[in-house]
Length: 608
Image 1 (tube, one colour):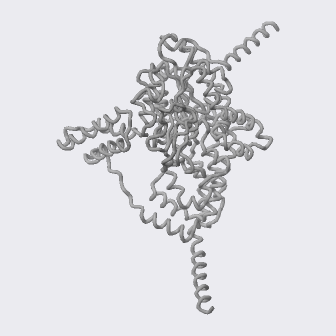
Image 2 (tube, rainbow, N blue to C red):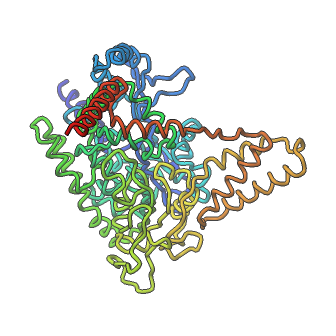
Image 3 (spheres, rainbow, N blue to C red):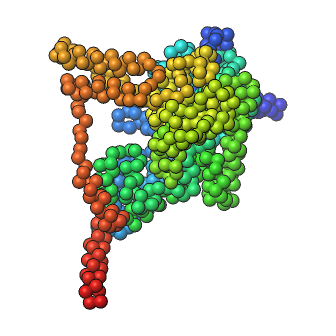
């Protein structure tokens, strides 16, 4: 009996170890069994581009009133709980014009929303979430799964020549444990090779996905031997200065002068008029009340959520890590997180060296970077370097040098040729903003001017380039194809495709000959432009505006309402100039002091 039990225990241990270290493969997922010309490709998506959903106490995914699954990224918004907790303190604070529990309530609201992504002191997520994983190629995903994937990366529009059974989408929790996710990626790569029969694969790290590429090359260098290509797309190889600023206490909106005078406008999230209107409304509370609430909310978010997530730490630039670690990871209870993040910090420092090792092994490496957009102004360094709104160019381009946004390199500037020794190569962008020769891969990095990071999925040229590189080997550098030059113009085709859908539903027989002719011409101009991959400044905007104009004229879409916010713009400026950041309840006292001061000065002058 004991012998039987021992055998069963041994079998159980073997089975469990197998389940941890690899993925069971029941059958091949491709017909080629590894003999075709295509390499299986694993997309490692960016921040929040994986399905992470809120689960109930029974482990079932929650759905909202419309039947849609409730996402846990970046937070779980529970409006009834928020109202219940914040309404009374907000009203009391408005009435009494002091902090009547509002700051504590705001911190609790932040906790209510973000605790779903909290981690313990071992950097393990404690929130009740479910990650949707795809242990199969895109071709075997359900319609619902494919729809979710296409929301993040529009495969259906651009995969073209690549067989769908050779395309894989690796998912992860953006707030999860970075080391664990890297191990999962390692296992996933081997699973893909087993399922397809191929002995080499392509990796496509996007944005935050670049941090896992850094990690897997450092922790599992043997993975380099099974790679055919690595195609980086705006990778956070040296993090984002947004996280570096936040982790080091350099948060812009915690400065009341900036919060009340420019923060919203410079954020790029809204126009100047709307920003000024909000600045005017915000003064219904004393500035110290509003700032107290913001400080407590940010303190919880940073200390209890972000600094316990090793994946968030992986987005901290290497130059900011030591000071941030000293600030948050010095306490004994943070030892495990410090050990884990320091391990990645070394991978980050070795990123260039590991990429060079890949090249030495014959792995083809390409990169896509975007530039000439300021960082979103959360941190103090938002306008000190060239970026794509979310990640600084130095990080995504592996070290390219650039002028500040809106400026150009000096007239006498010549390319540094740090990594390019070919005198025939010109790596300075046509707009004289970027010197690509200082980037690690000057001959295989493509640049897109004015492209915002979070709109990359809507840039058809970037996606066409990426999928071409995945499916074919004819492009070996930035000089291989006139269709994909090293320097290009960014664009966002999302609205244009939506307009095409509207056009398809129009009864053209009801239009006048003139309007029908203009509609057809506008559509032709736009579609002709979409057939091109070499962009000229302003061309896309002209085509989009022309199509929108005729759609407005024939009543297919409503004209965008132009609101006049001049009153709020002037009022906000006047309030700031005369009352600084003070709320309305403080203004009478300040006004009296001003009047009293003026009278005193008058009498002192007269009777001096």
